[in-house]
Image (cartoon, rainbow, N blue to C red):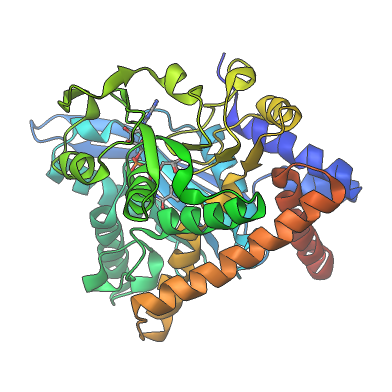
Length: 416
Ligand code: NAD
């Protein structure tokens, strides 16, 4: 049976609570979300029938600032998944020391079965349903699985129409023409790249000689694979939902990205040298770096023993279960945790929010420079704790993130 992601998120808190000898009251506090809103979204389909979808927005913590977290459209979306994702966002913004909290949202829907007009109606109605708990001072959504800048534009427009004025800071990941930030589209990939560079330096590995496997070919997987290719690194295997492809000498990412950008799946890509492989085979290929960048629960106690790499760089949120973490640590595989590795997205989202509020926009160089500074600072701090205490990078990152939240709770006190 699939692992419940919220149970997994709570288990991760238990692990760090023990290491930190955390106050039991704060421990209890952290395992609950602040608020969850479940909404019904009735949509008039193009054929005149009405379909009702279910949507969620969850705030795990707003103790250090407005909630921040993506919005996903997928049939896998349910309340516990959203709660887990919101919890992980709290740790991520805290680890980077951003003045934000953690939230997440989603709609249980297969967006590929909707027309563009249906998708727009779904997005606008969902925005109207959650309007009281989002806003630049409350909670700021962003793209995630199967959502994109166009969807963010519809949310911004719906919110602004209801408030009677343009409020760009209600979402991030918008098109640059309407208050988006340059560098946001590639921010998660860029952050992954900076962290991998830093990790390779620590382990005295030459990035260009490494064999890299990427699971997922969307916003995150596509972007990191592209950056690696452009920097002369070798991606030997890659997958999307349709299949994995493998070529020992390195895949031609330029051609593959052009193929995917036209809306094509990897299973239909023709190259006689490339071997089609399944998801299980892809994850257990011998390589130096494995980048799971698709969905959660991919490295579990079932396949962890067979994972054959030096570094797992978590592009996706929650791809490794706590049981698998233990096995990988024993095998001396470094797992660079999601809350650190893929935090480039939320970091540049924060820059977008700051730019919107100030109505002053930065150049790409400044975005990448500040991103690198913030993410590398978090990496160095995490790595140091992990080496000193001889603990996994995830536990070290959680020590930093959870301590900051615990301190904020202690300082603010429990209302009333
Ligand atoms: P996306 O929808 O753009 O891409 C997802 C990719 O994974 C697609 O190639 C899809 O075909 C593939 N995929 C989906 N289900 C799969 C399955 N069952 N097996 C194998 N492949 C599958 O989504 P994304 O925005 O790239 O997000 C991917 C992951 O990264 C998610 O866990 C998300 O929460 C996380 N993340 C995203 C961002 C961001 O900026 N978009 C930031 C941080 C973390």
